[in-house]
Length: 469
Figure (cartoon, helix red, strand yellow):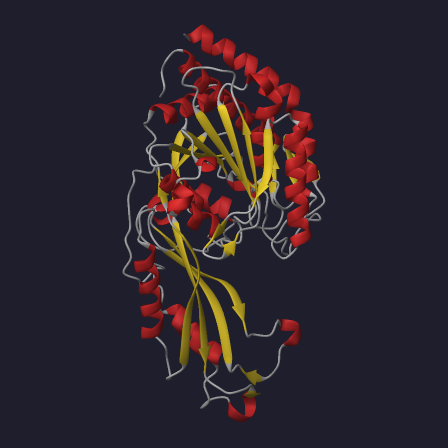
């Protein structure tokens, strides 16, 4: 058995090595398509390019699919199928990624949509928005077609969506509906979501849980219109100052969230404080907030922050006026099994409870996404564990939670209650996803591509041996 696995690993590694430079260039080309929501032409162009790449790789069938739910239509996704040679019991594996990216934002050392390669301390990296999140995932899946072609070891399905970053929830709602659950395009024995990453570069990791998310827009109003702060300031309340007091009331002095929400401990390994501080980029002497083990604070307890603000002029347009009305979008990360309705109602109730000075307040839902938890001990998850260990030359595999939300994971589970859902990918902490200078490591893309290929090979081998897993 050891010799068989060793030979298999060597063969897969050779295939990956032969494809890496081309894959790296394909990733650079995808990154240079600005596919963020405010640029619909870029989103469309990225989708067309994904279709072209998979057609070029020889996929048996690929198309653009626009899923609708209750009158709302999602940005089209790329759907593909590629069968295995006739093998009794060959499993169906669905590979997921997304082609939309975050807006570029400010503070880049390079141009966000010009793929720029640098090597720092011997680590080869590609910089640009979407390099890691999640066009690296697309390239991992693309490599499977190029490497295996007509000898694909499993029945392959492909779902590359185009609005993961906007959180519209249309695809998730569709999959959770009766129609979505019966849609064969989204059913599989194993679903591989290449949209997370290792706890650090070179440390193979399976993501076993995701926090949920609820967000609301809160509008606070105190005046009919702006008024001079020198003439009226003091007695007349400023809407922004009222909002600040409300926001402060969402956390205690230690930074714990003052909402009646669940917390969980799913047995995550501890996260070293020094590594977390480095990865997060904390300034010297800035304290970590909250109480309890760091892993619990990251993955199992609620956190709160403001992700958008309207009604306050930028510094360049500062004026001596009281603000009559301001709106903030407040995002709360939740424990993996937290009920979303309960969380939203609790957040809304708390905001109304702490409104100062009789200010008017309006709270409206913005977006939400359910959390997720996986069983890492099923046969297919153990196959993934072995594949990672082999791809990373025998390094022990970590199981970790993730603070981010991928609502589609729970939606896939609704449509596939018996399937295993595997979360992994290239997005280790130094990738700086959602931030300036996003990048991906060449070695991570190489190793994760190898792990995915080994997993598909193992799944096919089990089928040939009569083990349906």
